[in-house]
Length: 117
Length: 113
Image (cartoon, rainbow over all chains, first blue to last red; front, top):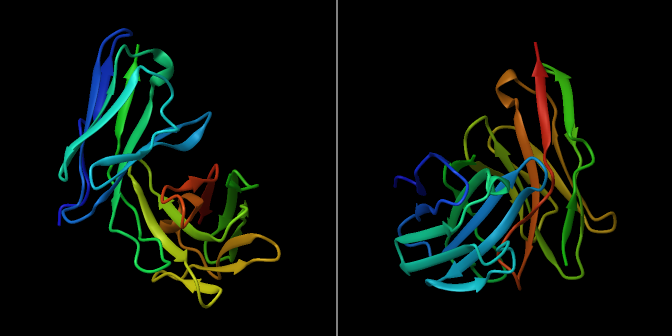
């Protein structure tokens, strides 16, 4: 399997522009997570889906951020309008459903480095 | 709410020396514990995890971690490090109610020749 695929790998945009980040999870994984990594706040969850349904979006910073999962093989994270403080590395991860009491491993994509000027 | 504390932001160590990266967590429910490693400009990779059973878990590249419930700790150890172990290491927790991971702030391991 190719692993979790994210695009673009790098994005440079100007303040006020719309940004769309894309993720293709590993085939057969029905959990999908979006995380953000910054120097100030470290790694933090933005939102996660189970079977394409958003389960927890408590980490989404504000209304400027939105995420969708129209089908099992694709998700988007959109920022509109973007601001310089949104500059970060955005990771997508996917996992299988937990077996019994266990929690399955999350597999991370390479990330998208977003710079908002 | 869960939280993870990694007290050491950087740990410099010489090659072939032992190392311990500390991780403490806080949670009101039973947790699952993970160590992830991040090499420069890459995503995170699972190093090892504790779900249940034996409190000592091992990875394929010589790392091990021990779950200590009374001390709410999950420290990562390696008896002899290599230059290639230079990376950032993240401790994380999740639980049965919330599948997402809560990460610590990370520890940068710098292995020097």
